Length: 165
Image 1 (cartoon, rainbow, N blue to C red):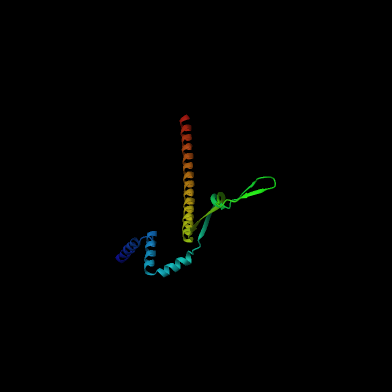
Image 2 (cartoon, rainbow, N blue to C red):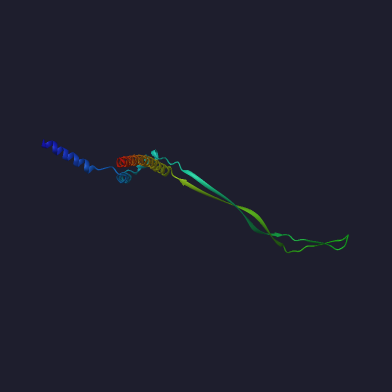
């Protein structure tokens, strides 16, 4: 008889000492495995969470005008009389400014790792499940409160009927 009590106590103590497997325990196990066998951990992570980067790019095109200085060969033609053409050539070049359009293209790329995407999708699905549970609990509680209000109304109605008699 005492042997059964001792076994029960030892089994209860063993259950209490082992505890639950928490996310912190899992993280410690991953760190420990990474320190001792990094190749095994990297192969496992690469197999279960392959790197399929998702890229989003933002392209912005802007048109600016730049002023450019151009040296033009000068020439000056003048007419002296009706039949006689006089041409004067100036040896200095003439500076002219011309505005030309230039395009500036800015490309911004956002790269996300597939492990991060998977982690966020798992978190999202867990949150959706919790939301569903909470809405069910809310509906059950609201039904319960509704029945309490109906019972209160009935008891008040019966009390009013008894008072009138």
